[in-house]
Length: 292
Image (tube, rainbow, N blue to C red; front, side, top):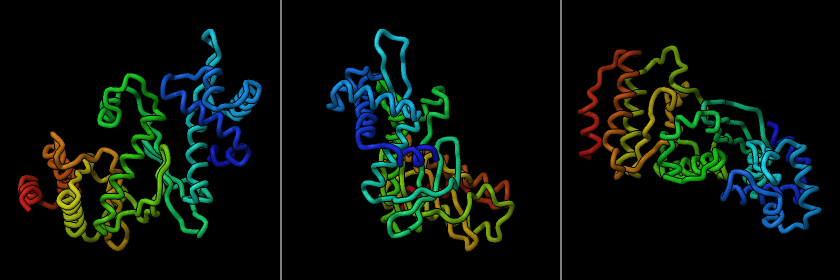
């Protein structure tokens, strides 16, 4: 990973300049040099030197088209800040190889000082188009100024909070270890997504496990996944299941809660009906969720 490699070459002054740009980006897309100087509290000479260095390393995007030169962080610069914070907090000490890549995130293995192996999830929602912005409206609200870096930060925070709630139920979900900006660190996930299995030995048992886990999460902590399907369920060789990717989750008191819950149940029922010929009654299952 490029950011992990570059982090070794950066001094604390370089990181402070990156953080100054990050602060300025809350107000505008690009941050003028004078504002970078102001937020970093460095003399102009030091500011210019550090800006030149971090830009040379490919951590910023420079805008020279306007009447004054300005900068913004790119995704690598944001990665650097998040990784640095996680190392400083002793959440991680080493980054390993990539273990997964999706539309909205990358997942790497990592390790802490005690050599515990974790999964490190980096949100990358800038890969998707702004045409899909409605999907993230619950995250961003009606903010007029918005960058994908900030959207990814909100996404990581939301999923981390959901994982913290669900972990209390002892459902064998990955323990959330920590997060910073757009990165979450959690226990390593073993197994693979349900969609990747050509066949499973006990489909009725797996189906029941998924429904039972959904019901427990809904009834005990008041959360609905909101985007559940065969790509969001991990299954291992022993038949243990994990429901992952809680970014789209909503609370049970959400105006669309019942509709989203019904859709999750329908998606799982549809998958098992088509692939394993398991019959299920969506209305009956939904009624059980709501009654108990």
